Length: 359
Image (tube, rainbow, N blue to C red):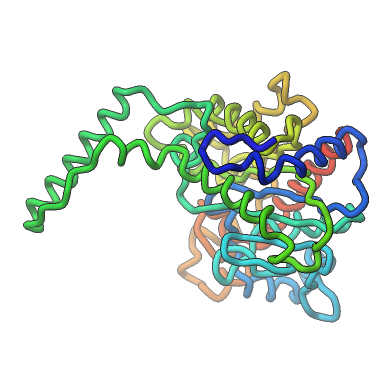
């Protein structure tokens, strides 16, 4: 059942649904009248950064339209009647535009694949916030807080910043306390779980089309990493990721919940180095953890790079019109490439279906 470790009362809300999910997984097939639920979590790249206008252009351009034809009908983007998405304060049937404002992410291709595969309706719950690290914001409960000396150093630095600001601006703002330092740790993990809890509580109101069906937790997808490159956080990524997977499964009440990790790949065609390489290796290593074999799958996103966007990116400011036909963001956002995000979403879908077949 849902753990109550953060005091949110999750256990009572999802106990029956978690039991049904476990039973369905044991049986190896869907139960009648269910909804397949997938949680998509991470930071800005899980939010989704490919401009909708780029999708629109490439869906019509002769050299790229075949990549998107399965997502369109009669010259328009398909609006699924069997796949739904809840992304913080937005909800509805899956179609283009469920990324950052005016943008689309991996959810479009991933959700389409899940909808095509399963006979039951599909619900995506997306919980993603830009700039959030695993070491701090998404820090799992079982990882515990950092050592006291680390927290004390953070407190001293935070207080020093406020003191300097007060002196410069002639203000008297209160100094941060140790509680202020501790609060961000695990905040996004708690918010993610709260988002799942709220959706489970209100899904029949949020999505009347699903009324009367039972929600079945079917899989979890993780797309994150950038903000763990700093302050040595990369060195604890493997440990934090292992704790994260354990805690998600415990709190959601599904011990072997299929878990897909899209490993960092903003390096594209260039070799990854430094902290990025450390994080990628940590993410990829989860597939080899003994208790995760057969229920966790990590894959490399750099191998899916959109080379047309990659080629133009270094000099994109010199020809913005040409750039807007292939990309729409910076390197840390996978160039805002509709092709790259779609390829990643497809790889997520392939990995998830592989894991589901093993259940």
